[in-house]
Image 1 (cartoon, helix red, strand yellow):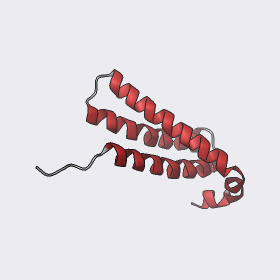
Image 2: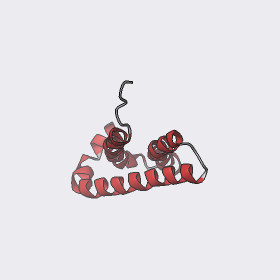
Image 3: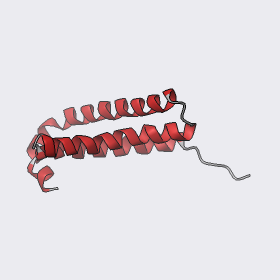
Length: 104
């Protein structure tokens, strides 16, 4: 949190670009997850899970690489924006895909 607060000026200046990149990253990761599940013959439920899981898993991996291998903890600012954007996109995806079940 302190790292992100320290980057607030950069966030303010680059917020539009960060949101755009976050949307593109999330969309590509979701398509990749769905595609991989479809190509490997997974069930519909698994395809939906892969679609949600791919962007989230890749965010964690990107943060780990940035912080440990590249020694760039300042990447946490873009990760915070990415997390917020992913949360909104995935929430809408789940709401659209998960149709309410009707009682029989």
